[in-house]
Length: 394
Image (cartoon, rainbow, N blue to C red; front, side):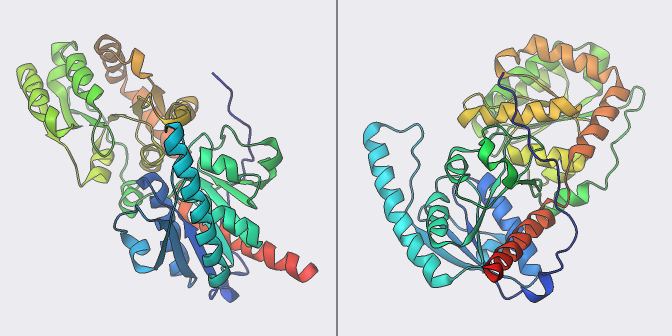
């Protein structure tokens, strides 16, 4: 495995002394695509909005409805297109889209006169960030994963600051290492509230809460492997289990039949709208290792068996999972090794050692950065101050 790139361990915190007289400054956010890119932008918008800063969002034309603070600010749409994994013809089309989008973004940035432009990865942010660097505006990017994304990799030499979620991040150029500051990955307010819930003790012969979640649409591999693994546990342990599992809609009935045949108490849905509360109630979580999932687990402080999505770009989920495994907050199980037999052995071992689960929960919580949104806001505000100081000196 390629070693992770060593980065600065400093974390931004506190309040900026310049904040009080910079509330009228405009901050432009560049984000689009998946929720993993959009959510930290929304969290930063909420934090900066509370501090009195003006905000605008530049996103691609394919973006759907925006919620939260992003739904309340000025939104400008430009053209953009991804390149990775596409055919040669589609790549040519995407490059043309990116070129047009960069010109559109350049015009917008010149008209808006922002104090800083912040990008959140993905090709939807690329035109705006390139345009901002051409105009001399202060720029920053936020990386959610433990591997610098491809768009952010292209931008790293151009931007002034790189905010990271993880302590170590792969693929950051050596020449850009001095730009790095660890802020963490912002999480939902409901997750922050769940952080106040202590890890539930596992009583002798008492119930054991197992949460299985595979992202917004569930993970099919969990539907096959988890019930089969539970079927291999000893009878005493299996009767104590209470399973909450997110499944794809087409898998719900087959998974329900499997648990019914085992006599396991299982709550199954294709979507749970109370995930923070369910994470807080869990003794153990089985899940993928996307940036949002990992940040929520560490914010609340719950141990997890992490099964990275094997087709993720640059295998970033494996690096995310390694970060948690390394600090003792969970256990990485690559999907090829995630068999019913291997999982049953792991579950039997973990549930027979409640103290080990408690220690892992504490390690996960210690790795969390609950004030990530405030840290990210401070990084942006300090960048504005540095930029202004350079202008005065010039």
